[in-house]
Image 1 (tube, rainbow, N blue to C red):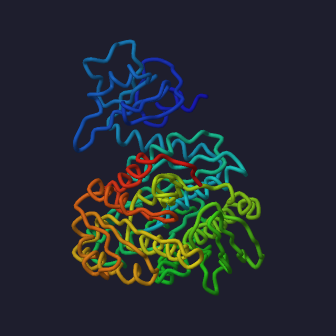
Image 2 (cartoon, rainbow, N blue to C red; image 1 turned 90 degrees about the horizontal axis):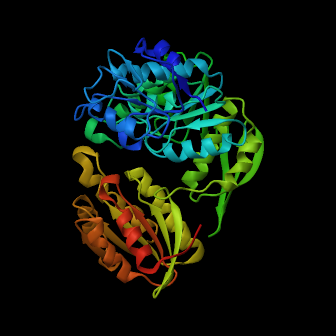
Image 3 (cartoon, rainbow, N blue to C red; image 1 turned 120 degrees about the vertical axis):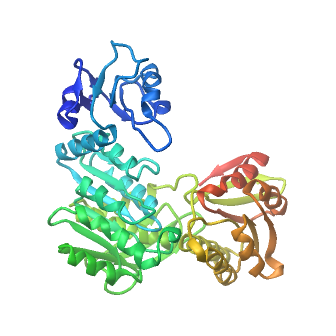
Length: 468
């Protein structure tokens, strides 16, 4: 399939090409170039993509966008010369956005944005051709790259946008020109780069800047910053604001959530219509994610009932709350692999999932927690603050990895302390040796802690029996 032609690229970027060609993809990393890709030689802070143009061609690139033609590039190779390759990336994104007639949805928030994005893409996949952010391509490189890859017959583009400081989301929203946006919530994350949580709310509210006239903003009515975000949206001219939540007053309202060890179910009221559905993920936080997805589907004219029916098929990915059943000499244990990232709000939500399991089934529950990063000068107190959640959810044993979780570990009652070590690799064997038949083990921490080392250690020691 042709994604972009040489003529498209020239029209979008103002660059010059030496011949006609057609490309099926776009890449900014020569190591992951697929045959038929355009390689854009980005000049970054630490490297110059022009060093890898030859390698990109060797890996199958059909063309390259460059500021200049490197000496090691053959004359037969297709190149487009532009003034600035980073600007060319954004120019191609604008070109791709302009030519699609489908709806664009932008997802942001402190917690839950990736799961919401994945759930939304899965739901809409039953209703049209979906193009969605892959992985964490949600910054000033990843989002325009995702847009460049949009086929022109895309019905729904689901774009995740992240940030670590103020001013990052606004230009990305203006670039994407979304038809609908959502702020899943505002929580104390990235405090290393902000003076207050309200500053985070201001930064998340930048997502309204590019919202198309008549577009819809979906907000979490349960979040303490809901009224503040709503005011910002109104001040920016957003007329259509829809809320979701479990409290009264939300147009998309979670009325009841139930779960067994195998599945979960939701009862909701969506624009005064009652709806019930099965959910392939666990935890009331994921039930709320599903409610927000229904609000987004409705905002772009999709079928809410069809979206709700699709949720039973949705499965979390590794690192995003996936449940893995492992059998060994210890018997059978269930690992909740939530290792991709962590923040105080996300850890509290995961601990609630553990607590519900203990309450409903009386399994022994174990929490393996790694440091949470980018929390600023109050990082130690924010870690210590999780002690009450651990106790309230009746966690039987806690293992921690890292310097910051040491402060949390010290706050815990002696009878639930497992061990504290410097790294996830160090703590893995301690966890393994503690396992008993029927245990449910939550493993969670910030990306840099590589908490998946704990999961892999347990799985590889005894192997996966099955996964749910």
